[in-house]
Image (cartoon, helix red, strand yellow):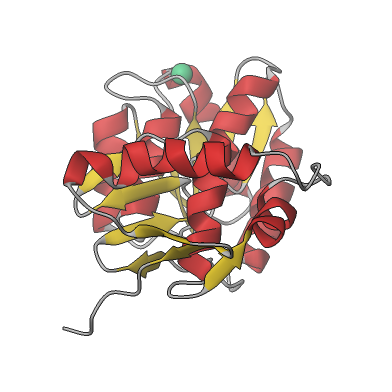
Length: 226
Ligand code: CA
């Protein structure tokens, strides 16, 4: 298969290229973020091996930009440190797997084969209602073209609304979906978080899409068909 390796350390890039070529793959190398993004966008690769630390912009940013453009080529991220934070950032940005340096070329080849086999799996679709949209894979949300900066809980709450537009959601339904343990039903955590979310999603845009349904709960306004 055709593989793109994005790695700025020339020696490491050569090593990976040679190892994968010995496995019968055709390998291209890019040595910084912008080059990697350009090559990945222009050519159809079966998989990308992506170093985390890169000049220009890093592997996490590169991966995020690929996913934002709807490119779902499998990405194996290389991280220099065994830091949970790096791995989480990579996976959140849409990487499919990661490998911590130093690694063996045999393991790299095996992971790539596994990723290529998995490539036909369904990707989560982008959810949308009106000009609100959210991508569960890249953890991004937008009002029109403006990206919203949401906390993880706010993101989950918006995702739940976008999965049920036009439907009244009770506080207990929301608690069950967004908080993974049972909150006291009398707790006002839902009201608090709906208020936070409105401040980011509605208020700055002069909108009232997250409606209060008195005595029942909340509803995301279903936009009029164009
Ligand atoms: Ca590097």
